[in-house]
Image (tube, rainbow, N blue to C red; front, top):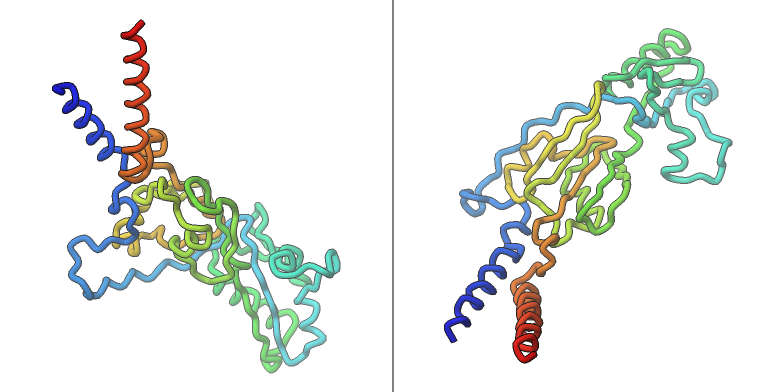
Length: 264
């Protein structure tokens, strides 16, 4: 009878330490924030500056449609391509020298520029070399979607592209099937590309402060890693019932083996 208490205490301790708590599963918790209070508005995000391998969509409109046509490529490499494939054939990729090749304009340096700055640069050259002010040219420059890769403890790992100008990490995770129960929401890893290389960043998605993080919004070519919680490697279960059942099964098996051994 005396040996029963230590065993029960052991089971209880393992159950408590092995369970994934509600705090570990809840996104954007408002610690110390009064209910219905306003969340401080996030600081304005710095405009994204283009990197190598970024894909741009550029379109030119003007009164003279015939002249404009030479600047708006229509790919004949794959006439049946649609959506992302069409952008792959018709878009403008920033090469390793930081340039894009625009029909009739040739190489245009865009590395480190915002899409608005690229628009102004192309529009200026068009007015200088091909059009008069009366042509009313209208240039549109956009990132061809925001592509990111997400791996680890996520419902649908892999590469995804969202056709938006701004995508939060919460939207990216939701778009990929949400983090699993055994995924670490408190230490999400973001590997981000910069002109001189890559940097590793961390963000705690269980805290409301994450919305003010400079890494809350996804940038093109981000790699998002969701690492497992220690509970996964323990293999005892993610809920109290699962853990209790697993531990009880182990103890029962051990007791049975011990009982059989004493009878021999």
